[in-house]
Image (tube, rainbow, N blue to C red; front, side, top):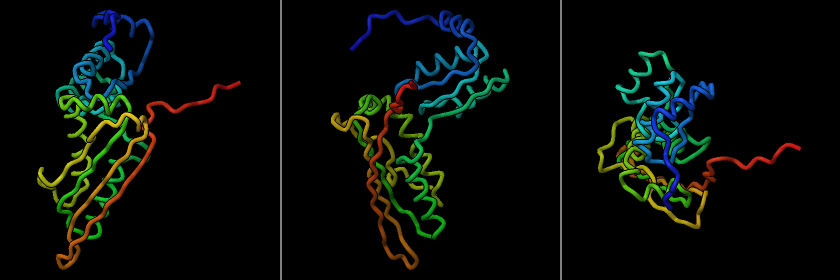
Length: 203
C-alpha cells in the first residue's frame, strides 16, 4: 500500500540528525532497500555520525563507502546481522565441521521460507540479490575449497504467508568421506524471526 506521506529531503534528514544529537544510526530498513540504505549512509556521513548497517546491502564491505567513512574517522559497521542461532550460522558451522573432519563437500543448499515482510520483499529478485550473495559468501568462506556456483544455493526461497515470523530452513549437504565414500546430511531448523521481541512494560 503506497503512502501519501511526503518523503523528507536529504537536507531535512541531515538537519533532523543534527538537531537530535544522535551519535549512531542503525539501518533496519526492509531487505533489498539498496537506494534508501545508501541515502541514509550518506546522511550519516554528512552529519558525522556512526552508521551500523543491519541489512545485507553492501556499505561497510564496499571499498568506496568504507574509504569515505575512514577518511572522516567515522565508525562504519556492517553489513547485515546474524541471528543468535539461525540458518546461516548453522550452515557455516556444519561446513567448517566438514572441512575439519576431512569430508569433501561437493554440493549444498539452504532453503528458507517465512511469512513476514522481509520474505514478501524478497519475492522481488532484485531486492533479493544482495542478501543471497551475502549468505552464500558466508558459507563459502567456511568451506575448505570454494564450491562452484552451480553446486551451492543459499538464501531465502519463498514467502508463505501463514508462517508469519516463523522462519523454516532446510539444509542439505552432500560430500565424500575417506575413500570416496558418499554421505549426505539433511537438517530442518525452525526459529522465530520476529524483528523485535515482545517485552512486557515495567510497572
